[in-house]
Image (cartoon, rainbow, N blue to C red; front, side, top):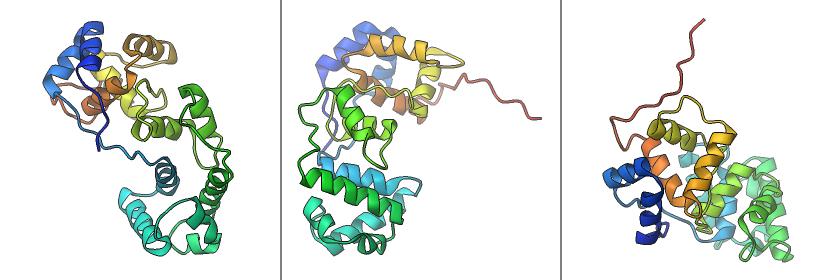
Length: 211
């Protein structure tokens, strides 16, 4: 399943920004996979911190094989040492158990919560920071207006498209206002640019001088 967007979002962004319109023309529609299961998305992010994607996938596979379905009930039925034996640290096993407990007790529900409140709620979980919370809102809940200042690739994409040397908070907010309410789609294109989707575009960040 891919992040859902279409002509409405594209037309809006084209009309708002000539340079982004040119980027959209060159790249075309972007298919970015989403994980619409909030519980597995949060657990995935906690597992994946500071380890490779391959290691994350291995631990996730072990969890599915050991627990069957990965949900609040199956995680709470396993103790922390059992989760640890799957290849994660004690701290991550603790964070996942804490999250499962909150879900099981019904104190964690984001479905009808506005973006800012949802980010705050997610970031209050052990092992989840603001950037991770924003990525969960975009790639799991498919919120349409997410634009992460803490995402270095988005900052890089902005520098490349608009020839900036540096993106400070004030400049970033200018683009957020311009792209809203479809910042998530703008983010997809900026990530693509940052990843080299348009080879002739370069990063205008000043090179650090060697001492």
